Length: 365
Image (tube, rainbow, N blue to C red):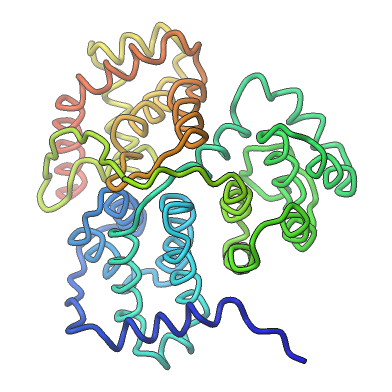
């Protein structure tokens, strides 16, 4: 007897939602690099700004469609996560492939629906904050080294028996595998199927497991596994809240917050900020050597601007992970973190002026 597909209902729901729409929003691509478009898309989703997110998605669909679909999968698990498992299922259904999307209406109708749903969804960044913790927390340095040398069988046993969430998450990430260029953890050859089976042993619900398994297949990222792991904890509050947002500054039709350290223009702006006499530049210079200053500024900027959410849902565990990520994963003594973050907030107007100058030069270069 054939087992029912736990993901089938999300494909059906996707088709139903497409059919029920009054209209498909017009795609209005912008003149942006794919990197700027991806940054704008993700941060606009975090802020619930469907107007900007749709324009960024239209840009990627025109110029780099493969990047669009992969980015939507990443955004769903990184920024929505436990906040809305049904939205994750809907997104995974849309990632089934171009032929499927063509059969149900086409790439833009599907993409615009998914973007709109992601913007409106309740959001939780707990899985990404857990991932950042296991990758960077100083007190886990020895565990990062030791676990990388263990066999997958031993890692599985550790994950099944430990009561420490970070240790379990680290073991699970190594079982998935970290042996690819640029991975922040020591290289370890993994077994993706074993990682998913481990979550099954731990008691993850079948539908949640199926959603996360499918996204791991599509992206190869650990985030879906960590969403599933955190789903065992539950404990989210019913009422969402909006993070306080700094004033938005438009540079042309692009908001300044789209220029982060992972875009060429954003990194150039941070490099110039580091050379000023601003408060945040001075503190950064006092905390870290010159080669590390732009990276630290980028981390500070992410916490006071880039990672902010509307419709955030929290809980005791989520709140602890968020506080840990905010203050303990900057790469500096946590005692200095609050002051450094305050200085970055104070210097955002200066940074936006620098961003405008960088973009003007890039557009007229």
